[in-house]
Image 1: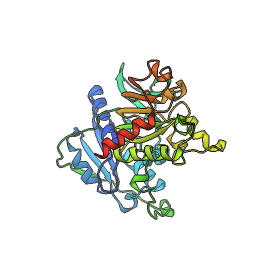
Image 2 (image 1 turned 135 degrees about the vertical axis):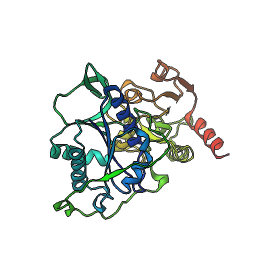
Image 3 (image 1 turned 180 degrees about the vertical axis):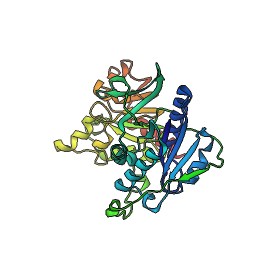
Image 4 (image 1 turned 90 degrees about the horizontal axis):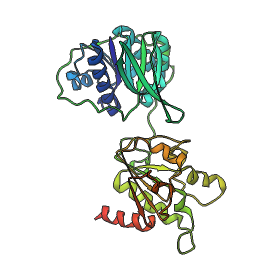
Length: 339
C-alpha cells in the first residue's frame, strides 16, 4: 500500500511539489503493483482531491478541519499521523515543502514510521523499494532501502514531472482528528516581502548568479556598486528570475567592503550553499571555481558572462561563455526586456 501525503496552499490548490510527488507515487505503484491512496491536509482538501482524481488512487483521505487551514507544527503533525494510520500504508511519499519539513518527522514518530528526507528517486528493484538521495554536498548519489514499515520518504522538488490531468470527482473521506493541546500555538498571519523584493524564486525558469566581480574596480579604475545593484535588481524584476551568488560576494559584507546588501547567504549557490534546480542559469562576474560550480549540477543550460576567457566557466563548465563586460551586457539586456 502506497500513500501520497499532500497539503494544500492557502487558496486550496496543490503546490507544484505536491503534483510532482503524485507523479512519483503513480510510477512506484505501477512498478510494484501496489494499491495507491492519497491523503490531503489543509484548506479545501476535498477540492484538491477532485483536481487529482485521475491519478488512479483507490481512496482519497482528507483532513480539512479549521485547525489545519494554516500551517502549524502540532496540528499538522497530528493530522498527518492520523492519515498515515488511517491509510494502513507501508510506503508514504510526501513533498519536501517547508510545511511538511517541519511537521512530518514528528508525524512519523507518532505513527511509528521511519522517515528519510531529500529523496530524489524512488523505484522498485529486486522486489524492494529503493530510494536515492545525494550525500556530501551532492557529490555522492546513494541508494538505500529499509525493511521497517511504514516508511516515509520526502521527495525533493524539481525531480519528477508534475501530474497533470483533467479534474473530476473524487469520493473523499474526511478523517476525524482529535485536536487538544496542539492548539496552544496561535497562527496570527504571514509577513512577506513585496513581490519585487523577493529574490529567491524556486519555480523561476532562470537562475541569475552574481559574482564578486560586480563590486571590483571596473575599466575606469572605479567601483560601481550602486550601478551594479540597479542592473541586477532590474533584471530580476523584468525577467522574474531567481537570484544566486558566489560565496565571495556574500563574504564582502563581513570584510568591511562596499557590497550588494540585498544579497545574503540565503542566495549562496555551491558547495557551502544551495543546489537549486532551474531550466537555465546565467553566471555574471564569477570565475566559475569548482566549489561554486558544484551547486549548478542540476541546472539544465548554463551560460556565463566574464571578461576572462580563461576562467573556470571556459573549462567545459558552461554551455556558452560570453567574454564581455557584464555591466554592458546586462544594461543592454534590460533595455531589450523593457522594450
